[in-house]
Image (cartoon, rainbow over all chains, first blue to last red; front, side):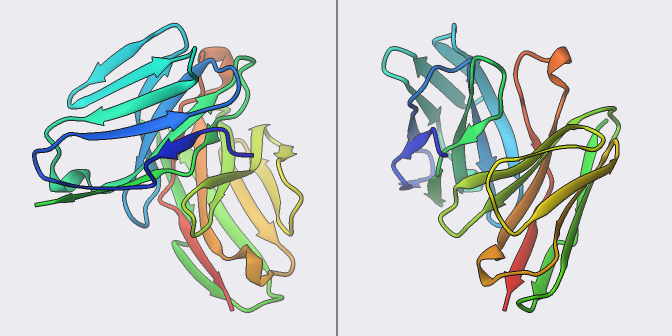
Length: 111
Length: 116
């Protein structure tokens, strides 16, 4: 069953703009992760935020987590055409079980 | 460093034919291994996972099976493919939980299966 729901399903922006993607989930989590998938390729892990953290940065990526609202956001600043990909959130349950992936956001960055 | 190999990359098979997708991991011992399927809607569905040789957990009832004959080898099989088995299959591995507080997955490049 799917736990994470990404919003929007698709996002189109111009190079240089910021891209924000949101993820909502339903049950308690130990951590939330974001992955990227280029068309026709495997997923690549981007960043992990634990349930006791509120914000995390990695390069041009900023992830926030609000456990009271059961939601997370991924911000990509100063986007580039190479950022064009699908982005997935995945939640890790408290008991250390399997990751549950959302449906993804398809990001298109136009040069 | 660790690497994951998955093959074949592309496969076109007739309905009723058998299937075998293979995944191997290098550079680590006793990894957790996973098979996911990704349909056209982009979401990932966990099919099987394994925490050790011969230990397979199935997440959803289906026409597929998985085996782990060696520590770093994970095989996805079917005896008779259905049209609905078409999709993009992804193998992944993670560090065993006793060494990690979170399951971070490393994915293979994927296998595109088309059943005609």
